[in-house]
Length: 587
Image 1 (tube, rainbow, N blue to C red):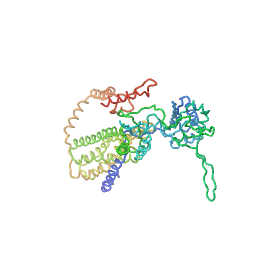
Image 2 (cartoon, rainbow, N blue to C red; image 1 turned 45 degrees about the horizontal axis):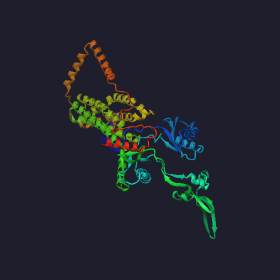
Image 3 (cartoon, one colour; image 1 turned 120 degrees about the vertical axis):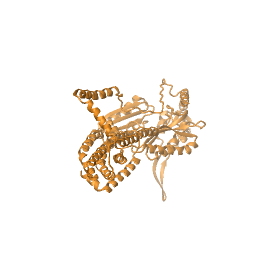
Image 4 (cartoon, rainbow, N blue to C red; image 1 turned 60 degrees about the vertical axis):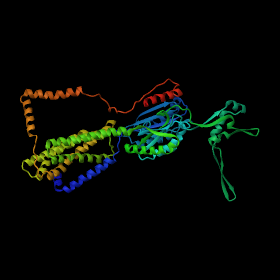
């Protein structure tokens, strides 16, 4: 083969190529994003809007149905699902995997701009690429706890979390967004509580008052020329919340009737309908999502460092503390470490078995060269194709550890056989690789043909196991190139003055004799064939595990769910009881 001959004639070029592969492979390994599972593309667009105090029926008729009418017929749309509950509406649009989601997102935004005006109190629709909360698992959760002895309520610190904590964490490289989840109190709202008796005494109608408050705004009145100067005339009609009580509704007998005379004006956060506690303390939840291309472990470590600084600074000054609730790095490190340990153990076992058969350090090292070169070259391809380092890709590498040695063993055995016939080291290396090239190519092609189609599957199965297929396919292809280029050169260099002798020759002869006696007659051959077929089939049927999508992930956690009768969700005694239960679990 010309490739083998060129390699034997240019050892410096081969050494440089190996050094480049090792260097860029190690660099790619350090730059690969690390996460638990591969990225699974879910072509979904979600639309969320709210209408305060509206019933599900009103939400459906006034919000959901108009939005559905303008979104019908979008190219690539496979399913439209809508959910309406008290005060909120969700519309999830699911598309085919071949859909260009960027163009589709623009089309959805364009159609939403043609939507008829929603009810006045309804919020503007929020369009998100991805179902629900982006349909991606959170990187981690932190809880801002109100420590005992700190004045006020936890809801008083929602604005602090929005203004201080959220920007600080979102500035961390790799963080996509931070969602602050309060205790159901919602956004700040202006609340005007009317005294109907006082309003009736003064003859003030509430409908006119509401209309006047709705029109209260700053109005431009044009320009006024005064000599050489030009002034902008502006009528101030907008009030700050603390000044709104001075809003004049009417004049009676030369005296103003102000809003504060018939109503109480205050800024609140509405009625609390959700309670969050951590370690028995009232808390605010912060959900942190990472960018799709970010390294989960690096991003999480950076977030932890920022949170530690915040805990020592503004958080501590206010009598609060931020505590992590879910640490994904524990599971990622555990899973990656387990698979990585299996890979290392597989490499040691493969090299150890090679040495047991060859009993020569140099010969073992020649074959073992295929492992690091093939694996590091696979890391380069993973980096170039935008893949991540996860348990699926590492599992593929674990499978490939043994497979990459096949071609090298075959080539080395043929070189040793030709050396025993009296050929020189150079001729044995050249002809040894040439003679088995066709068989190795066919073997590699069949292996690649099995795994390669998985890479082109667009469904969830293909996205999940694509990393497994690409790692095995690339590692096997690279091992073939190593077997016909690097291995002959190494054999020509390191086996020049050594002779290989099979130390297990007597053992192979005894095994061959046992096999010959077991197949000496047609009856024995039929019985042996039947046993070799039936025993594996019976064992497979007996030991067949339960069918499942993925094995369950072991978590060091206990989840408890309680369902209470209507009307008890916000009862104070219930919150105290939950705190009592959690304190018992902590013990």
